[in-house]
Image (cartoon, rainbow, N blue to C red; front, top):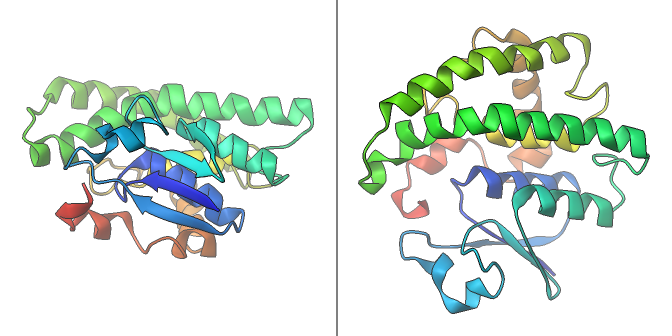
Length: 215
C-alpha cells in the first residue's frame, strides 16, 4: 500500500496528497511530527536521508522530493496529468518549472515569515517578505494571462502543473498575499476547491493552521 509521509501544513506534502487523491489512489496519510523531530529519527532517515517531508513508501519503494513523487505517481498510473507524449510532457514540465522556480521561490519566503517563523520562535525576515511580494507582481501576471486563454495552466485539460500551483497557493489568505488583482487565477482556484479530489483531503488550509500540533 502507498504511504505518504507528511504534515497537514506542508505545501509540498499537500501537493503529493492532492495528486494521489486526484488519481483516486488508496493510500495511507502518515503524519510526521516535525515539532518532535520525528523526521530526523533513524526510521525516517531510511526513507528520506535528507530528513524532510514529503516522502513515500510504495510497497517498499522509497521516494522523496514532492515533484518527483507526483510525477512518479502519475507515470505509474498512466494519468493524463503527466502525458506520455514527449512534446505535451515538455509543456507540462515547462510550467512546473516556472511555478516552482519563479512563483514558489518568492511565495514560500512570504508564507514562512508571515505564518510560521513566529510560531516556531524564529525571527521574521521583513526584507524577504517585501522582496517576495515584489517579485510575485512580476511572475503571477504570466499565470493570469495563461488562465485568460486556457481553462487550466497548460490548456483545456487539467495537468500536474495545476496541482502543483494549486497546492503552492493554499496558504495565500493566511499569509495575507493579495490575489485579488488576478481574477482568472481566483476563479480557477475556486473551481478546484469545489472538486472532490480536494474536499476528500480537507476543507480548508486555514482550518489546519488552527491546530498547533500539526506543525
